Image (cartoon, rainbow, N blue to C red; front, side):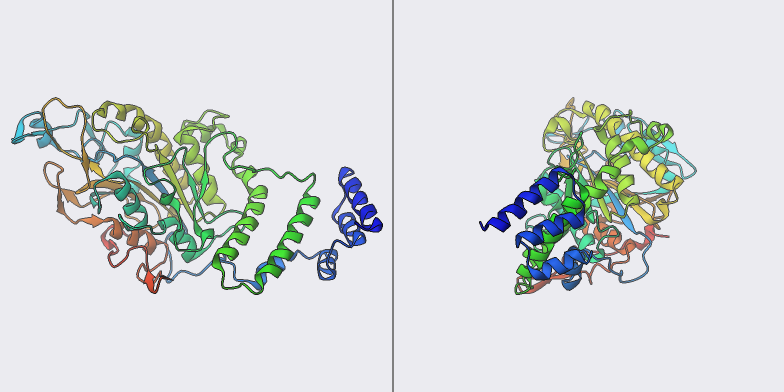
Length: 478
């Protein structure tokens, strides 16, 4: 290295120790000859090359106008992994219970529920004893008792309700919303997922597949550091800003002749978002700002960073800060920690207690803050559980995709309503079937998106979330 450059570099290191300001850093680097003239002028002028570079290429997360006036600005998607039994939670079947353990047909016996049902609110919607708190917010919700899925195994059903396909890799619904609407906060991703473990289908649940990678969900893991590298490593904010500005300059130079490389653009944008998250994330996850009354509402102890109560309260803070789509996942692919109940329905007491109060609190909290009017809350699972078993006395239920229950609240959904009906045993749809594509189309509709117009060209054809299916369930909307 030339002697003058070596001296300037040494001065730069000394200045770092003395915590220099931005102008001192630029002078040190300029004196060493380590900066290109164009970059020197941009930095010295005080402009942010990251912003200039950003303006020269399309920002894939820039806010976009919906197709029509939207009722919802954002979505909170609550996913119960494992297949929650509709018969034991939201869909009472007194005849099934009356015939419990009697023979239905050869090798098939009726399996009734051990939990009692109660009517809640002015609507009188029936919910089982497992969910007394959620029962208390049924006047705000539309309960769909006629959901169907396109696959009966965990993997296929999980990706089916998230991506619209049970067999092929497709972008998640959160990725489609990010692609269609962008973000309201450039320092946070448009799509965030709070998931302690990996659900069935793993990261494909929040993957972007053929959409630009910038639209995939950012996973948050409950704990003391929900997002890795959340705090800057540079000694000062000035040092970090200069480093990021230099990186943005060189990224833009590299991109000039590679504008068609969406993966490169997405990677550059992801680093910009990561830098913004270092500014926004510490505040986002600082629950010390919440009142004792709010913590008590969710049933969250001060300092606790685990459990579904933490997930629900953080979700409210995310949507407050402009995140478009937040998914909360309860459970993972370990049968001891999810709602899969082939032989142990008794674990539902523990699982329900973990989510019941926090989920109800989330709806109440959004309403208190005036946010429920434009926040769509969706509570679902991949499928239900079957009403018939091979032998009497079995404490469990198998998979059942033919019918299950889901509910929605807020953002133009008709509260206090039950839509659709399963047959008298909860075995199949008796009235007003709602497919996963119908649910997806309805969610997009509330966001102001026509599900047939939200497309992305890939491998020679235009793809959409609902594939060639889907209808908006207008009857549940006000």
